[in-house]
Image (cartoon, rainbow, N blue to C red; front, side, top):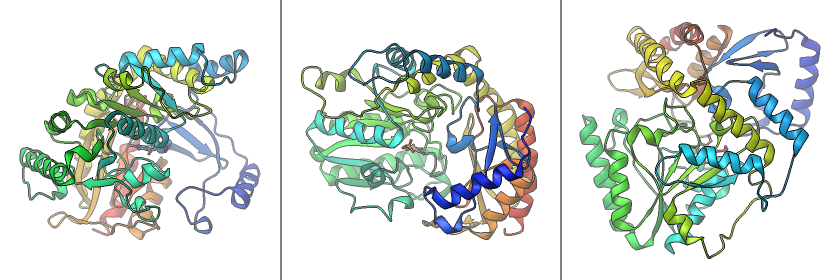
Length: 450
Ligand code: PMP
């Protein structure tokens, strides 16, 4: 791969962007987006020829890296054959994508409803649950992110909900396990698990079980901090949902398709939800695609009665062709196993070694290619390195951390007081080590604020 060097072309791209592109989650005049000239595998580069190792996988979605030749070829082939077709028809790319996904999802999640991305997958999962149960409320965790559309943002628990929340219409939030900052005064995983389940059952009891349609959780909360739940928690939630007739939805938009070193994070905990949302890694984001994997019991509700919802581009042939190619690449090239092995043998020990040397690292947690470093001012008090900031405004310590990472050729994922280590699942051992070395330099800067 040869990084292009054409600063003038980059300046033109940037000028048009600044004039006309309205960016997500940003104060438009306060941002300075990097003009990107190209990308390949685990890397991308700018017009000045600076190359970055992408430890963020874009927005945690390029699970097989950029410009995989087999996916690019599949897209070209599909475009030549049938570039678009309406959702009410049986199309080869769509039926093959659904088959490959259903074969890999846990249990009897055998029917696939396709959406354009993660948020609308959550919208439809909740609608299915409401129609299935005839109930209206939705339970979700405070430390969660479920998408940016109106209902998905209401269901989201993290502070990105605040500016858009219309009053949590029918949504009740609860505390899920997070031992490092336990709401339950727990000191062990087992205590955290038991107390979180007790808190959840009490919440259900006081809300009225007969009013609750769905309980939605990210299998491993992603953007909110990669809090791997204690063993037994998700099985306990499954039991509570069964006991009270609540539809259990797992949101695997970020954790699915290899991210955790399993096809789905649900496999790690051996739980099967009633509905499972996915997006991102399903086709590495080459074309927007998401969906809901539907269990037999929920599918039955809509066997003779119409499902009252749909999308113009549901199961778009290009998106589905990219999914077929991506899933085949993952299977043929051992991508899921690579995430597990490089995660366990290089990333985890590397991050633990960094934590031992850097005072700013409060906790390392994660699995596979899904890791978080929580940065703190003080390891004893666990005071976060920066205060929570719903506006997402720049803050000196994390900005300095990110700038140093970038100066060392690493593009980091930074959120509040955390950096998430979420590289492509195809990352090589050498690339992982290169990224860890750049993180080392960036953490030395964070240490100055600790
Ligand atoms: N759920 C989860 C767990 C996510 O991480 C995201 C996106 N980060 C979404 C839903 C929303 O997905 P999208 O941005 O594709 O709408």
